[in-house]
Image 1 (cartoon, rainbow over the protein chains, first blue to last red):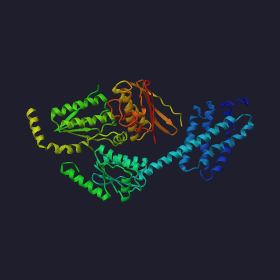
Image 2: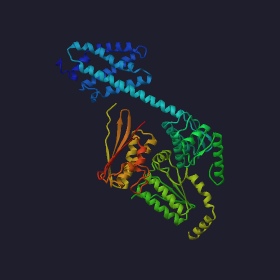
Image 3: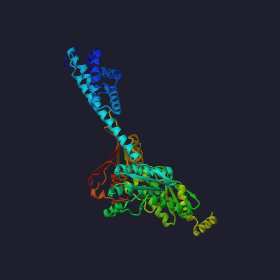
Image 4: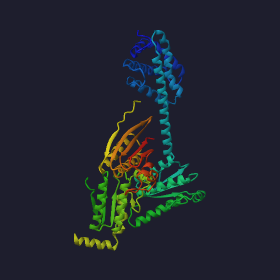
Length: 278
Length: 134
Length: 137
């Protein structure tokens, strides 16, 4: 046995390997008690075997801090485990406890005459990494859902050959305006439509910022060779627009979606008479 | 200096399809070439297809506006076609406008847009002159 | 998660074709960073404006482009440097429509709107350094 004060990674590996069975037993019991009903004992056992093997491998390759390259594999396994738990709806506590329970198995080793402080420190780092990856995975899930919600809330519908419409419902913030603009413009290209109608009947209020977003969309559509009408302007909104001094410039506005559709059809007919395709 | 951008002639319309990432000097040369071709051919319309362009920055934007201005002086209409949605959004954010340039979704629609111009009496006259010379 | 390894790519800006090179490099990295198509286009357009500024107003200089990692986000950072005359009145230069050359005056103010991070460091006679970055959402 080496000097107590300077426990080298190899020494720690030897000690850990020698008592692996006992450590695993205590660890598994502690974790299973906490995670009762969330995951099966067999699954935990497999997970822990994998983590312990990677930990031993890392120690044998001379690793002592979690950031060491020797622990690449260990970090990978942990990241996977906590990301999976995040997706399965585990709480942060339930995710971290599986790692911190390893300490329960390590404490008895102190009596074996080896200073296991570096090992305990390593477990702490593992626990922190678990938290970090768990939080990152949750954030990714939330971002994904927010995006899906945005997509869902802004359908672009085809009203007629060459005429598409977006019925906007709810508040139009910058992020949403961006999505609406992109989706509408892409649909113009995909369907070869020369007319777009943005219906704002369901938009509770139009302030200067919302007006700005609508304007940008109309200008971008024009650059691509399409004409955009804003419909569904309720009387109160018309009043706000005037009161705020918002300049809609030469943008076509109509009271209802029906008016806008008739208008677009009229423009299509006029274009056909001079030789434009429908 | 890279190769220039080819200019095709269809009836009384000149068609330019920009397929490469335009270098500034190439863009300037295209502007000069087009002015020359419009006078040479008496073209009444110019279609610039930019569906191949991944960006339109202020330089390219200015080139498009200049071409439209030059064509206008030479009595031809310029139509810019096929701008990608991402490019249009970026141009608006950049604060770039194409001035009075006409736009269309694709070349087919641009040709239809220019078609009535071709039926004006002077087109018939110009066509006759061209046939005699050719 | 493995440690981020990003190399900085240097592109000297001396001719028109170098501006194209900068655009292509920024686009390649923006795709690697998985920026959305619109964000890619905005970033490349801003890089094009700034590279041209470096060439035209700075009398040539250098671009440094790199893939950047910040936690779970990836992005692209680009720095444009020149030893030109610098910008005497920065506020004025950042105003829409102002130009000292033959441009439309949208280079600086416009590109600032196209990216998420924009920083400029300049003084008369001391050259100009502009840093831009955009991150994946």
